[in-house]
Image 1 (cartoon, one colour):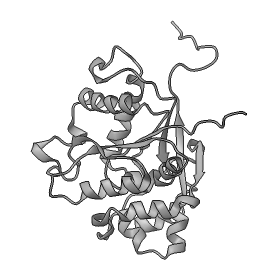
Image 2 (tube, rainbow, N blue to C red):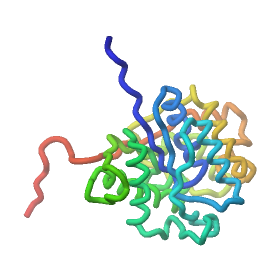
Image 3 (cartoon, rainbow, N blue to C red):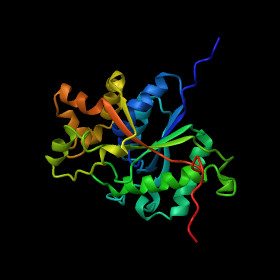
Amino acid sequence: MTQPPAVPTLLGVFAHPDDESLLAGGVLSQHAAAGARTAVVTPTTWTAGSPRAPELAEALRILGAGAPRLLGYADARNPASAPGGAVRLVDAPLDEAVGRLVAHIREVRPDIVIGHDALGQLTGHPDHRRAHQITLLAVEAAGLPHLYPKAGEPWQPAALYAATHSESGVGLLGPLLQSVGKTLLAVPDAYVTTTVDVSPWAEVKWEAICAHRSEVARPRPLPGLLARLLEPERNEIISTEYFTRLSLGPAPGTPHKLVA
């Protein structure tokens, strides 16, 4: 009997707690429900008294994504968020941050890595953009044995997907974000290579978003904005996830020759 293809292992890399649930909660819960190993790395971290750490742990439990994995940096807009005077993610030495993420990639050994896009997701948060840059470098470095040799045995993911929003796919999110004065950045439609209907997992995704209670309680963050919508409108927003597949490794076919 032919064995069904294995469901790929996923590793998400998302800058803050709630990013994982908002941007890829459907895909993460879908893969976990199918028996895949899933995990999430969160580059920013918080002091012991902050609610965001236990909220993240609860959201990941709901999504089936294991325990939190933190890189230990502070939020760009809340420099005091991390314990011990840790630097902001946007100020962290690039080589150090990439090395920390490489260690998680080599430990989890994912088939697919998913993370932020180059724009920084609709509002262009600097931590989102920095996380995108670090993820691009770490995914390539993780497969090269001479880079970060103390970070574990080399592992090359098969694919890297950037969570994004297309101009035509923004839908109700546009006026929702603009209603609180937020910037709206979206990629051209041609940049979206993968659109996933996650409506069967929308209930789980919403439960994970709601686990971030401190953000739901605030008026401007997206969890709070979504919580004040009627359920049909909210489901319309969270039931589709968009991604851009980014190239990894040597390009197939005949290589182009540089002009001397």
